[in-house]
Length: 388
View 1 (cartoon, rainbow, N blue to C red):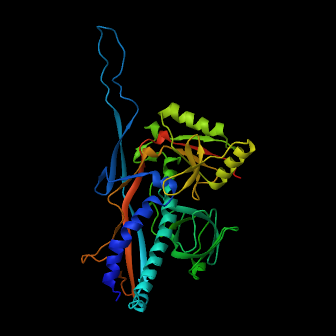
View 2 (cartoon, rainbow, N blue to C red; view 1 turned 180 degrees about the vertical axis):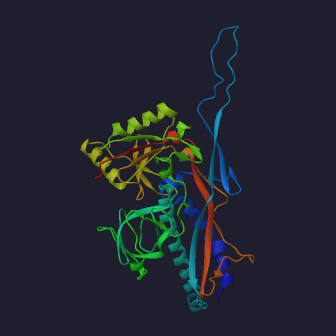
View 3 (tube, rainbow, N blue to C red; view 1 turned 60 degrees about the vertical axis):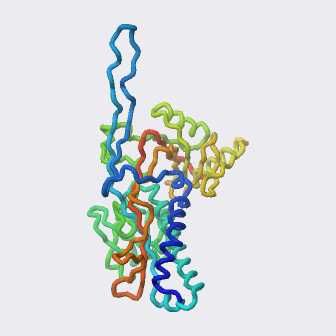
């Protein structure tokens, strides 16, 4: 007979390893290439010494002259607070009791809930990889009753539980509430709560995942932003914190190679990964076809496929900003974590717990981590590309 105890054991022994592996390697091909490590984690923070520039103790001289003056390596300390990443499943008491005498039915129920958790986690963590840590999904254009019009629906999906925060105070105006439907042509988002007519969002208010404002991973958006601060340091004082930025309306081999050459000249960086929006990828494919060039395909870790640019994989990602291509050296990126994915456990060691005052049981996956790029000036972005 299926019991809560047997379900608890299944989550610990059968599902945890599989789920952790999928979340670490199957979110997207870029995330799969980023090394995950527990180094440089101190308490609730990541504190990492990043070397920059050159050792100054090099020189040439005469046979009897003075030796070069010693010049130690230059270091800067990066500081980030570990982000709290959660994923929760819920199973009703009624569903558990209905499948008590049918192990197969309960396994199917648990498998369906875990698959739903994986889909949601892959979507959100893939989105965070391109974010700036603020968790901003889009901005409000207008609201009518329980329907809001937004400026961008790229980061939204039916079923998400979101909040709308005031643009000025960052205090909640709406939510948490669930998205029930999205019109991707008109960019209208239907919200679950029918009483929202009394809670009107204003233009430029921001939409975030529930409770996630300023609590998400420090992704590519932070590295390539115009913000003066990165990892607790001022970019004005540390110029090497600024990546290379170029603009081009068309995307050609020469445009990409020029950006790669500039990185080599500035920092000696050799990018090993190119990621762009799907429209930019199509524009590049059009360029190759027009110039009668072969489109070489590469097989990547995790079963992904990519176009090859001189041996560098070029992939598209649904969350990459429109008209944008990133040229990245993934060896410079690390996901620093306190531990790998774990179930939250109570004092009794159980991971499945009853929700207070509800006939529902839940289990929560957790990971404490954040991402750091050791060498921001070794990365580049090409923006303003006309998409196909």
